[in-house]
Length: 327
Image 1 (tube, helix red, strand yellow):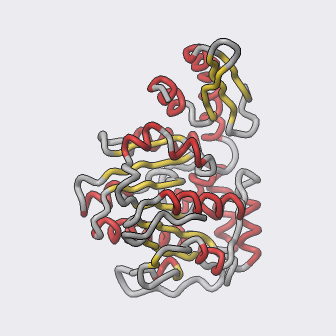
Image 2 (cartoon, one colour):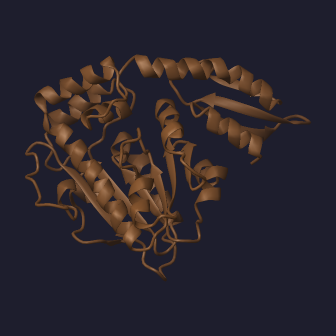
Image 3 (spheres, rainbow, N blue to C red):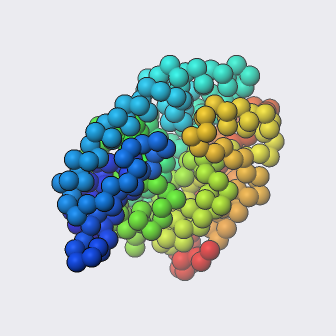
């Protein structure tokens, strides 16, 4: 992939963009990833023309996403007591909290788990991290946590939300060892060959793949395929970090409330505990195994888990000498 095409892809994450051979000359195709984003598709042999065609639509899409309708990342930011949210996000998030106030507790506990897991993996000598579905920046971020242990740690943040990417590129890309990629974790082939990712992550060396609070926003088939792809891609010595909501022990009404809150922008799927455990197939789970997110190596005494909601977390390692596992 050319450098110019990589730059255009990074600048317009709301579109899937690729090069294909036309009749006698190559052409570039851009197709919208965002519902109701116009133009839906652009085909042109000239990258500059493609950029001109996409620029007004992309600006409108980011502005629209920033001001209308609840957004998953911004609602999560609100539950974390962040600042990057709007009235629609607060209204939708508060509607959930009125009946299920424990959701905010889960958000904080999940963020704390992420920090503990990154520290744990960094202390094991892993120096590169791939944060899939990273969401809005929330300090301490993955690179800050990893670098407290290993100052040379490299991190790639990935998300498909244009609003998230705008914030991430402004706040997270602090040096040449931290990158932000606009891509969809369901688009495995293009993601794992992305020029920015492959320049930053050495796929022959151990890597920590983070799928934290993202898989329940995919359909079951999409989530299973994504986990299998990255689990197979990880070289021996790598770690897979997962947290996800589970239907096991969770009030079904909470899942329905979350589905309503996100307004059809993403599915909300509660997988059983056994289905989540299956994501670690072929890996060795670090103690204490797959547990409630509060209970994974807590820094202090473990608080009681909310009675109506469960969020599971685990860290699995692909053992050295183990061949790349085939799904």
